[in-house]
Image (cartoon, rainbow, N blue to C red; front, side, top):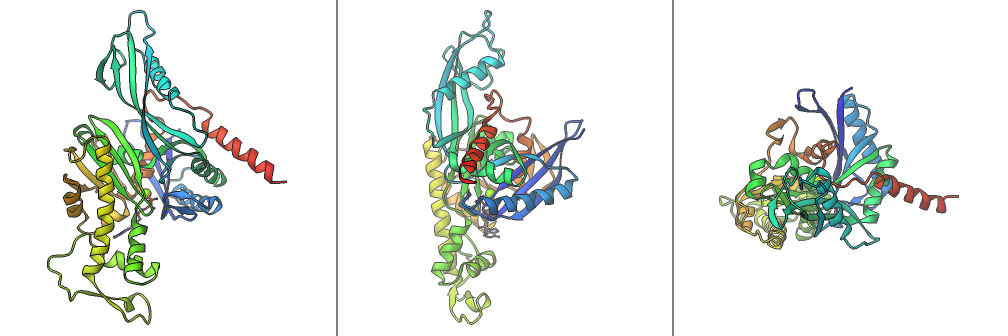
Length: 407
Ligand SMILES: Nc1ncnc2c1ncn2[C@@H]1O[C@H](COP(=O)(O)OP(=O)(O)OP(=O)(O)O)[C@@H](O)[C@H]1O
Ligand SMILES: [Mg+2]
């Protein structure tokens, strides 16, 4: 039987589906991708479940045709400004009498850390990711299995989300005929195929500039220090242009795609103009390209300020020698690297290819999230406590509610 896994990225502009296959020799191949315009989302959050389910269905159908695979279940990405993160800690006594730490001890320590999280009925845990283990007080341990000690402690990063937002994702997938195998924060999935080991080791930040939001993940010494969502994306830039140039959203989007730049072109003059009549029939207004660039630069500067704040929160502002990696639709704005370098005071590059453990994957970076999600299956997080019935129970809950309302 073929070892195929599926990832679905429910984005604000598009739902993308990736089908990846693990070959017997250990290589990985992207077998098919699907992309359908998304409906029913705002800022990465579902506001119309039926419309989103329709988009998922289309995207999955396309990926299924392209790959020849039947798609009934998938790993699904989580985005949106409802995602949050915080730190938790847990400790256990090592079980074996000879003191050798086992995989189970690590899992128990993580479960203990999860147990310390105060219960909130409106929030649901997405990840509990170990940042560091301590063996008898000795810190800096990434993999404690096989070490000898009496007490095992763990510090972990918790990523959680609003329960209704997560329920809507599961519901939209179920309506589209897809069972949710697991869920993963979009940016965590993307970073697994966009950052290389060296960047993760030295310290680096991934910034995914999407339509509704900009997602970030910060790594150092191979660990995920923090991940989160900045509530600004490409649609905000478009809205700013519409207001600044007093035009409609559709025209503003076209103007952005044609003339956008993060910084003024040094060769440009005040005489370089945009005639709105090219985009809106009968509109005779003319604007300087410089003004458009100022509008875009201002919004992007806001994004980079919030990215700096995120780095400060973990004490790493300007201290990530692996640099910043940009990806996402809005990362194709010309001169964005220069602006980012200036604002973030770090080396900046735009992701151009996907790879996993040095193995290049043949697909455009716009599929980074869906491919990262697909590769998550069967790999996931080491030591992660299992939540076998989590998705089932959420769906049961929804069905119960539906039953109450549907005669
Ligand atoms: N060449 C370009 N110049 C400027 N902006 C662009 C360009 N290409 C795409 N964009 C913008 O990128 C955004 C779409 O990016 P992307 O496809 O990464 O979003 P998404 O994944 O659907 O959204 P999200 O991740 O926020 O849910 C849109 O706002 C679009 O206008
Ligand atoms: Mg996206």
